[in-house]
Image (cartoon, rainbow, N blue to C red):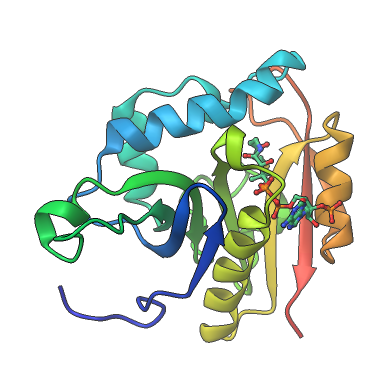
Length: 202
Ligand SMILES: CC(C)(COP(=O)(O)OP(=O)(O)OC[C@H]1O[C@@H](n2cnc3c(N)ncnc32)[C@H](O)[C@@H]1OP(=O)(O)O)[C@@H](O)C(=O)NCCC(=O)NCCS
């Protein structure tokens, strides 16, 4: 596979009892079913709060379509066993985290979607998830670093996200990382009002 900007392994993290976690782009050999299952497991936390995000129940076909619209990054557990460097072993890497980066390129109707996402200097991320048993160990912040770095590589001015307005812990997690409230929006495919947040990359 030809290397692209942002294609390098961005960081590894040692998690006790699990080993080394590598951050990289999603590869054609990665399982979309496994990625979908990971999203379902992670977003179950929001479902328990009564928030039905698309990622909590989307089919593998929907995941495939969504990842094809941008750049999907994953955190994978790498094996220390002999032969782990072979492509066969790499194909069995376990996905434990993901985030999806999208360049500014509003594909919908000019009157649809949050107005902030229409701006030519605002990229966004979505499908952000970490394996529930591994949350709170810093993986999520590392994945955020990946997309923010990618946005800077592309000289973009802002990176935005859409989250459930009612998930105040998550909203505060983003605020602590420099994201500010922009506008509320109803996507029509969820049962809650979303809050659009954005961070200046200046
Ligand atoms: C949102 C989500 C991806 C964050 O992932 P995460 O791996 O838990 O995030 P992190 O561990 O990097 O950060 C979470 C907290 O743990 C803290 N943390 C970081 N390293 C840590 C460590 N080694 N030990 C303990 N805590 C640590 C962070 O400081 C952060 O706390 P703070 O915000 O109070 O500062 C994850 O909670 C998730 O999958 N949620 C469900 C899906 C979802 O809601 N996605 C977003 C939709 S918009």
